[in-house]
Amino acid sequence: MNRETQAEKRDKSVRSVTRLTALAGALAALATAAFAGLAASGAGHTGNATAATPAAATAAPQVTTTAESDDNYDYNYSTSSDDDTTSSSDTQQSSSPVTDAPTTTSAAPVAVSGGS
Amino acid sequence: MACETASFSALGTTAAVTVVDGQALPEALALVQDELRRIDETCSRFRDDSELAFLNRSAGRPFVASPLLLEALTVALYAAARTDGDVDPTVGRSLGALGWDRDFSVVVARREAPRLRIVPAAGWKRVRIDRARRTICIPARVEIDLGATAKALAADRCARTVHSATGSGALVNLGGDIALAGRPPTGGWPIRVTDDHRSDATAPGQTIALAGGGLATSSTTVRRWRSGGVEVHHIVDPRSGIPASEVWRTVSVAAADCVQANSASTAAIVRGEGAVAWLERAGFPARLVRPDGTTATTCGWPAGEAA
Image (cartoon, rainbow over all chains, first blue to last red; front, side, top):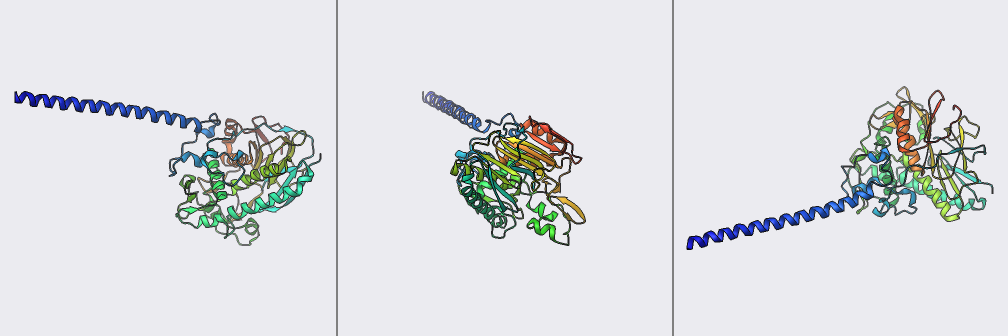
């Protein structure tokens, strides 16, 4: 009887460990899913307007130590006008590299673009 | 309404501001002069007292930078990333080793050419920016040169500032790096593209009209000097530390702003034969001139006569 009790205790202990393991696994799966969701939403802003250009294929920087390493290389200078332009909110948009092509004109030039 | 222009010397080149509303010119000129003074104090490689000079002497220690230097370096790293390292701000020692170690007027004037040395760029990925602490860290013996992008950034900032302050359409031209803001004149801004920004409107080239954005021209024909018995130019391939092969003598690029135009035109010179395909893929309208004067164009840039 005493031996049966000890066996039952071992069984209970095993079942308990099993339940805890399952619970931990479920929590881990939940955390993984949540992280994947966050990662996906992050990818949304880094792979935006310039995705079709070869520049967008540039390898992600691997050497930066900042919390938001992509920010170092993604800078929306087209819409910033004051000094404090390096905040992460400014860097989360990329300006398009393209513009309307020039046209020919017979007007007298107001400026010269050449090497300097 | 006739456009009005004022010009002056700054950043080792010619600066000019053109406004659609002539009455806005005095204010526009003051704004541009003030902006360029700040850029020079911050980003010059040839002033011992510039903030960049202090950064270059920081020898691997975190350097607390001003917002303007952080912005200029961020733009330079952005250009490096977008061009796969063809435009690299760590070429400071490469240029110095080739003999461009002080203001260019001094380089061309000195009688004795320095010994030619070849020093590849340290590599832009070794530059660290910590936004939270507003610090920059570059390894010891790495020298940052912002010449490729700071001038274009200055043009963009100036054009936006002038338009914002005066309401007038504005064109800012810094040694051929052109930024546009606001409403253009009827038919667009007429601009001559040629080898040398100091040329007049009759120089060989092409006159085009642009409605907005930026335009930059890079050329191997203007900034040249002798070093170690050979003639070199200033557009260096960062990977080798050697001036780029002269597959193209001049490249002009139109883009959404001047920084992107400048980065692409410089990268095109460095890329040589691969430049046309790269510009096409990136969507940059461009005009490329070979040493013999024949031209190639991309992305809708209008065909023109040989240069």
